[in-house]
Length: 343
Ligand SMILES: Cc1cc2ncn([C@H]3O[C@H](COP(=O)(O)O)[C@@H](O)[C@H]3O)c2cc1C
Ligand SMILES: O=C(O)c1cccnc1
Image 1 (cartoon, rainbow, N blue to C red):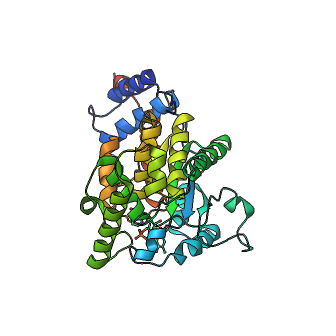
Image 2: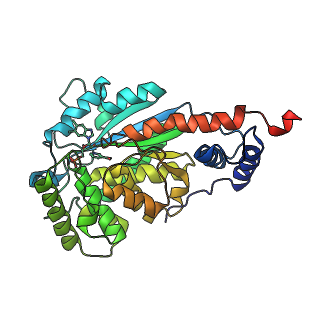
Image 3: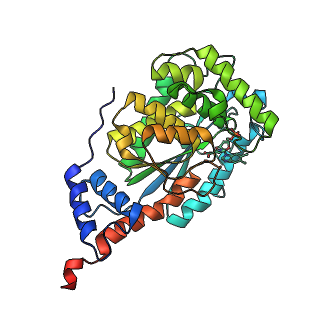
């Protein structure tokens, strides 16, 4: 088990006491109040630190299930999108610019060899585990040992960002077919039928969704029940799922808040909790995805999404947009005056 620190209860209570005394009816700032107190507990201080240095890490990699027609887009899009992230014109990069967050893309398991491309700096491929992950309906996603190597890579990446000054971490994902893998992981951890967790991802039609359900059913039957989280990631996950899980766990280990994004980070979080049971105390859910497996994962983790904008992009795009809400929560706590000042 990975040990995780406990957020500061006294700071949370002090924050709640101040919130109750602000110039407003008791409780009238709703969820903002809960988030403000949460930030105080995470930072162990009232006021909490500013959330100035927000860092998104996009874990890029391919998934063998794309061979089964589970996505509306071809797997080549994954590698192509790495170049878009580097060019700064992806959905998450544009949204991150709005809030002053950095976006880093890492090639964990992109099918293509990106090292030959002049626009791909060596740092992007420094944590590469393999080229693509296995098709979980017919084979294990990973070779023995790769799940823990990828998990450790995710932890190391979180450490790099935290050591460089991150106040808040956001996991992003880029991998055609990854909503199928996310559904399989959530179904396996929570014991749910494939038909309940599978969604339409990038926008597959009813035939595509039926293929996804069949792939997840075959994967669950092949993997069987039980097994430790690394066995789960090996059989039903991917190198990106393992790396994302490590990233989420390490944020918690270091006591740095993490804002989960869509379905892929939700599934990785569910697996990470199996390894680090205290970790969800350091996580918030940025937004509600349209994928059913994300809703199941968040419910199991006890997390309520901050935003619900109907997004189904991934990349960290939803979580990034929740950052201004967190900043607002901090602002009301620190800048509003007190009812007692009215005399
Ligand atoms: C151009 C493009 C950019 C994306 N950025 C994120 N995704 C998202 O869609 C994919 C998952 O959906 P599915 O399981 O249906 O393939 C992942 O790559 C995810 O990051 C994208 C997908 C596309 C096509
Ligand atoms: O909500 C998500 O995270 C999502 C949905 C569809 C495709 N990619 C990501």
